[in-house]
Length: 319
Image (cartoon, rainbow, N blue to C red; front, side, top):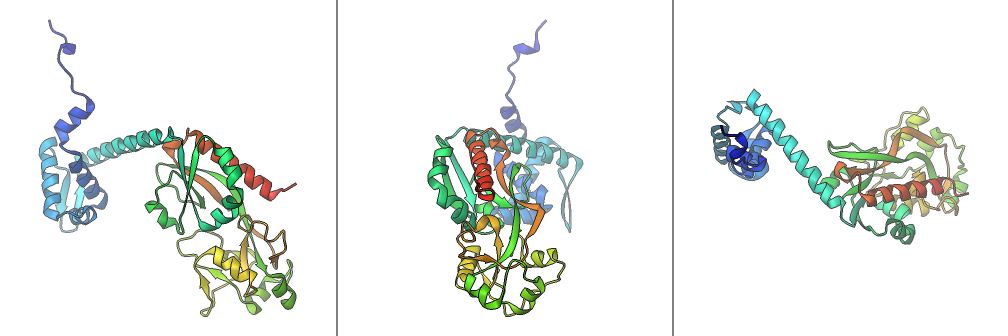
């Protein structure tokens, strides 16, 4: 009698290679499955449509099953195709988590933030941040819009009201409150104060606006809505590309800006800018620290999260 253990057994990787062929073939299949189109997969991978068809045909020959039904509207997965697509997604997901785990053992961490966060939260505290992060070395990279994050090489990010991907986790840092701000000179000239009627700001005062396309932050529309007023931007309003430029315009007395309490640093405390309207808080909107799931146990991520929470607490309650 012989035992099955006497027969050499291929590893999972060897078995998959034998059945499925090279990895590039799986990538082609994955794109076609996700897009429902061979031509779409070809465009995404910068190869020809006939090349996609050849890869899929070779894969079908390997697994001895039809993976797509082809028609004029595109290509739809068969039941066998769905099974293979799910298995490939699971395998690629496990690979991504493994790679992130390896990166998590590194003493390097890359943090992506928007310019206003870098200027108001991090720049004034770089020395204490480096001390709190040791021995992890923190590298800071800047992104402007949420869409830019996909092209940014980062491990963690600070985002407002983030839309998480399937392999991302987050923790809230601070709920945001907003209020109109102006230079003391403009406030005095126009008779503005924290109790100013929002309707008067809408009617009589130039409002400074930042470009909020692809940004989830609280806007003038949200602030007016929080005060029970419908608001539409004026066609002749100047729109500034970044929040930092907006604050500079407010300091110069060129209009009233919307102030995010956590982004103003000590400008209000030093009375370089003064509140000129009521505060609106959105409990459902907050800044979050976002990281890849594979970095959940990274000591540097834990240290960064702890430091940020302590920094925000001190900012909100300086006593």
